[in-house]
Length: 461
Figure 1 (cartoon, one colour):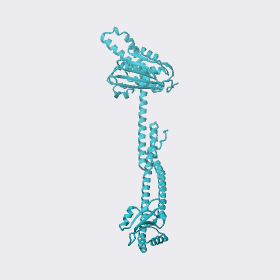
Figure 2 (cartoon, rainbow, N blue to C red):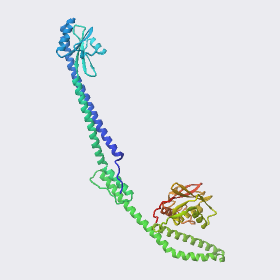
Figure 3 (tube, rainbow, N blue to C red):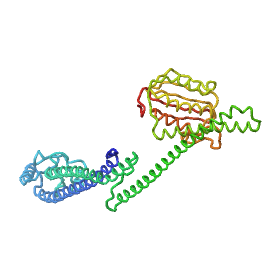
Figure 4 (cartoon, one colour):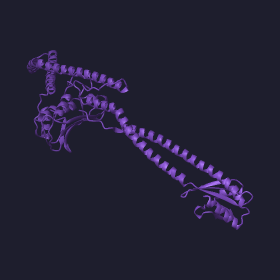
């Protein structure tokens, strides 16, 4: 069964996007509300303080002229009514030393110009200072309003808004995660279904609920899976028929080909007694019978491999002596150089003999130059390379080189049957190994057989 698909980046991105939208929206709303309320509270306080300062300036005019005694009476009167004031008439005299801010230069300049001015001080206590000139005098009177209550209320409001914003973000994260999970659940099912189909479970289907986009997607996926299952089923049946046909042809040809081989052998022994034209025809006949016998043998071999009837018996094998024996038995000793380090590997010598001669035979038949077979260890593997210095194989042919009956030059009627490399690859697979090819035009070709060193190949018995 296919593995579960993790939430992945898409779900996280959807959740983050949801949180960002909700967080930014809530933050803008909360920040805007706070700033508007803050401005309204301060504006209201300023309006009240300005109106009160104008009135207090009129009352202060009753204490003119400002002698020492009248100054003291003015400050005492204002402080007694609950208002903190600052009188500047040469000296700066507060009615309450606790609330005696020093007016800034801009405020002093505004007041000196005969206008009403104000400024706020930061920190605690938070003070609003509104001042002006006392009518009929050059003395300046500043009314000090304590705004700690307003600042405290705004701090509480800010704290409440921050807590509310955090709660909105957390709620948005939870809701976004739930929505993303629910929204992407069909995607997860589709991913698991696609993986199951890729693993060969062609009967996998997606449930179709409703008429939304995901349902249409699921229906399309099911149609695709059904078509794929039908197509693969047809291909499997065609392949099975092809294999049965190959096996039947090889079986039916074996008896008459055996008789033909016997007759051709007898004919070959009397070639010298035949006249010229007849001898040439007889030589062609003998050669074609030999090729036909080889084709039947390879068809029988590929049929047995397809049927899974080839058992693998693993024993310790000394690779170099085996390769030397194969080269010598086939008459390639004068064209193929076998070299490398002595290597013993646990494998099936019969399967190796079914694989390696096809690689060397391909190099002898179609390669050229120095043909070498080398053996060496590479970590936990044994590498057997067959290289030649022939014309090479065009790159477009390499992906299909191990296909059955495939030939680089289809026009060539003599030579191989197109089954040798396919048989070599099947034998390499039975040994648990890997067979690869690399080639450069004008440089040469290299076949590499990689065998596990000491492991149990698939099917080992």
